[in-house]
Image (cartoon, rainbow, N blue to C red; front, side, top):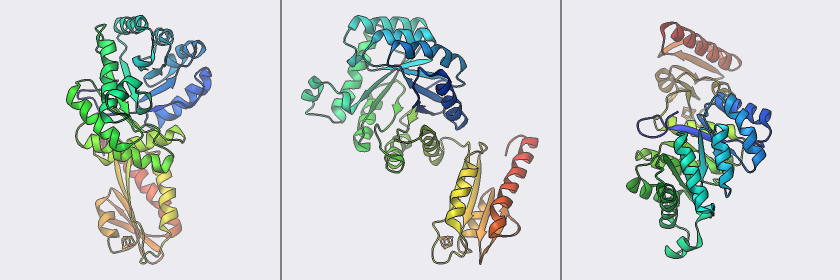
Length: 346
Ligand code: SF4
């Protein structure tokens, strides 16, 4: 998978399993790949994990990035094990000779390197130079990390410089995009729990993508990594950068609502998350905006007094009860998908 240039923006996540456990790691990769994850990163903290990487890379359906800190020998082992890319921070590898060996082997095997720095890993010298942890010190830290590889003629680099503050992260990446031609991996690091982290990531990553900055993204959440993938895809879909999957339009409900929309929306969102085809589905509470939105969607429901009108491609199909509504909607979607498969494209 290509990252950068005109390649589509890819969604990444990171395994929560112990890399030494090949079976568990592979099953988590399969689950994330099924959910739309394009690239998976995993931690390689020791030689045993580097050894397990071989089987994982062999069977993974998506590219594997080995995340290595401190020990350059683990980076070499990961490249030899078949990692599609590695992520290092040359700043925390003390031996320059080790960085040279990594650059040499990675070039020989055409393995890209993501240089990843974080607001928490800026050296004391750089912090002193730029008056603490800020966008300037973070960007300079990334610049210095790239130089550590460029010095040995290595330029197949992807850069990340993440901060837990979306504002700092936005400012940093804007600076990087002005000075680097390298692909940029965007993320708000340690973004927090599912709700707060989703918002911070959407603000940080989304603001940059709107300006055309960024080539690959990772949403970091203290949650099941499948949520990271779902949020990443939603960010791309919100910006028109990915059309795969269902865009659900649902109203917030109000005093006019006479159907149980909130529970239905939650149930529908879960069911629709399994569909990969690009579809727009509307679930609306009443006749004020409901029919308009439902008519515009591929398939839609507009609520009334305890019933719904079911729409498909702008036409009313029939009136359905509250209980029938979701099964009827899903049946229309299934028919639509079947027909589009026959005619090749929705
Ligand atoms: S569509 Fe109807 S029920 Fe939903 S928020 Fe608008 S007015 Fe209220």
